[in-house]
Image 1 (cartoon, one colour):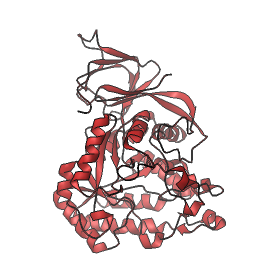
Image 2: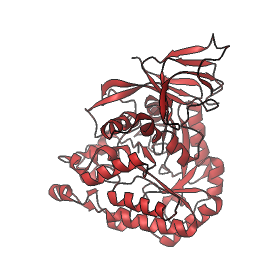
Image 3: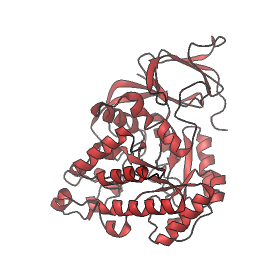
Image 4: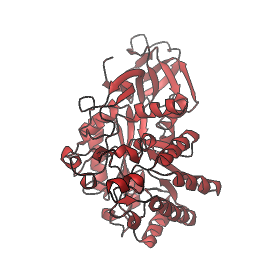
Length: 432
């Protein structure tokens, strides 16, 4: 059984960051039976409890990641469940949602149950599968969403596979709405984006790369918002990439539509200029867009228009990356970079730590419908302890993930996880 009720544990001398209450303060955290029983004075009777010295460390809720590909089943040559869940806890991620684009896709209850069982056996990060919206992600026939939900799916998505038939899309959203199943879709018109590998703009033109225009995203958002309003489906827009998309979300909310959205951490920091001289590590989906788009995403994340930031963790084997840009496989590793890159954005954008950490803890937990991302008495003891001042350099030797593909390779980071606790049990520790 995963995450059994753990023995008593006291985390001493740390600075607690409460993203829900938007505050940080020095306090001890006492845990018993996998539950936080006190934040502050240690109750009587914990004299013999295990202890972690958190002096100089920040103690926050475990990170909640809305998109992490674990590559099982089907792509074990890129990464394994064991390697990527080890990377998750090394990055302080205690809960994650995995997209359905495995091989075969997560469109059968048996596959979902197998994935959940494997993850529970490893007893590392908690895994929440996203079920396929259509059978085989083919965009034609609706999956048995009710059965998939019973098997453990928390939402339904097409990952990066389109539903080209708008009538099918409408019917899937109607079906999902009738059971209040969340629908997570990445907005991209497949015809406008067909064959594209980079943002349509000056950089792509100069490099001779086929482009994906911003309107491929915005036209798709118009369609999805219209259908969400028509069907009453609970819509979550995945991986926004443009300034115009941010404005569309603001307008939809202003009109009364209950809609949520996220952005990948890479798009918070990078733009199409970072492709440089055909750097395939910057080949991402959606593509890195203009400086203006990046800055709009950063601001929208700060003001809450964008609800959450995710790692969009996509480990790719080296052979698939060491190809010409247009032929290389898109994706970057991100589980272990989510925390330091979020702290970097917060420092650069003058966002206070509790607000910044809310975007990777309680806010994504709310989207997932989980009682996670909290640090208070009675909450599940999923915690991340990190040193905000520790400097380290991203590279193959410093990443636990089997995927070493990242545009941040060789760059310095500040902030590193020292301990990760899941269900009151330390599942990762790094020496200072």
